[in-house]
Length: 224
View: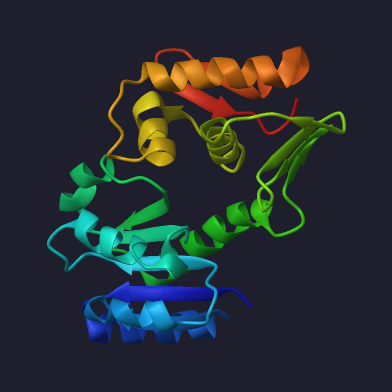
């Protein structure tokens, strides 16, 4: 059973969401936005965090408060937000997906299952495998033809992010925000440099997995 962490300020809305998600077969823990200190003592492990920021002043404020807790530092996040928050998305890194209100409980369930299905590429012990290229997320290791591939931390993070979103095109700005974070000081050339290094290390056969979309950015192909 997948375990979800639901955080927001509107208690009645959270209760309705919890009731629906429980019926869908999820395990759900609810925390009010002002109760995040409880995360410091939590022994639970969550598959996905769902943050309802539709009643919050700033999207980044709640995300920063959640990320400050060790148990949620690397937690995948799905954000529920108003259209007025869209401008802030470009300053937030590490988000899996978002849903703009008005939305239905059924739409949220579908989005959660979509994200979890994608994240299951990273299930402990399974990792990602394409041909003889293997990505072990838990160990931060990549192997090619059975031999370790030496990647820097950011090269690994960039490869992991692209590989877990196959077929989806990301601009250089999006990759900077998702992999380096919104507080990174540097230009989009950083992305191009890391892509070039990744392709060189992957070799002629597997370099083509990282496809350039002219005038847009990059995407990861699902197969060779």
